[in-house]
Length: 315
Image (cartoon, rainbow, N blue to C red; front, side, top):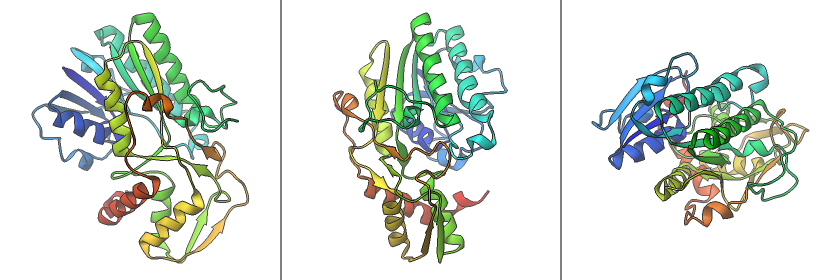
């Protein structure tokens, strides 16, 4: 069956696409290559059952790409949470409006299954940890989280209105090979430029769970193979978390550096930076999925990838 993957050249999208192509599915990958890398597709771009289209999902008429498709994995998004307030229309355009366009293309072409990458950021700053899927939503704290929550609402409404099967995954942050944004990426880049000092946004006690990209993909595929009907929402993460200070200690140990650390005074690195993220993953575990890698293993794997692929830090 024909499967569409949006964001197929991105961090998570390239890993998911590689798996689907390897399994023999006919896959059409869509990506604008602004944050995605063509090099991330090197393992599958020349496979006969993969077709790549460079396309701007926001600006282009995308309906034609969805003809004869059975399933959509929608991973394309602007994921720059930190700079959201500097570009206030970016999350609206690249996340919410693009998701609406994809849902319309699915409706027009009678595509019945969508798997959507949401985020743990939609919980804002919750009162309960680990945070369950049915937790009460507090006030939103980031434009990114707000845009993803709007996407979830659209997907649920389309599912009920047009009889779609929808699977929404609320991720913690993801580590692993091809990781190209986030605090580890920023810290590594800073330390390569100046190994003697590291300025850190916030007080360093932000506590967050992280998941390896291989475990993230295996969770999505696990649900894909179940062939459930209706709307389903799953948290994806680990039953553990780490502070920014602890991740810096792990990073600098691997790099064999002892920089002077300069921390901010606030518990948030920026507006929208949630001081703690720990998601309840009992629901996804009931389906048979289990994560295999610890946070420390994922940090080490990510930093080793940086060392072997420093081209990702070049514009």
